[in-house]
Length: 149
Image (cartoon, rainbow, N blue to C red):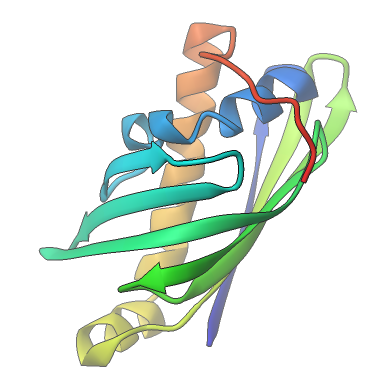
């Protein structure tokens, strides 16, 4: 298994950052390689990704969700094996630190090489920068889910 951990400061309150992150179907707007996400239940999402020309589909289950604090997940079926955690830490009333940690199992030589060359780290860092731009430009979330898991 490989690991990645990246953080970014976003210029929105913790509730705004957290609420937007719970809108999984909006992820293709700021995550490179994510073509589509379907929210199938409160805890199950279906992902379609295409990274480096490789298309994958998988289901991920939300294993923990605490409003304004964290969202954790693990893949439960399909063509990817990963788990992760995103945390939200208020810096002050108008700024939040978002930290994304992910464990994943590179599949095949190409993914292993990409991982060793830091491609995955750069991908996650870029996704967080695009999230920052997305939420700061809007100034408000596209929706929210405040339930706990």
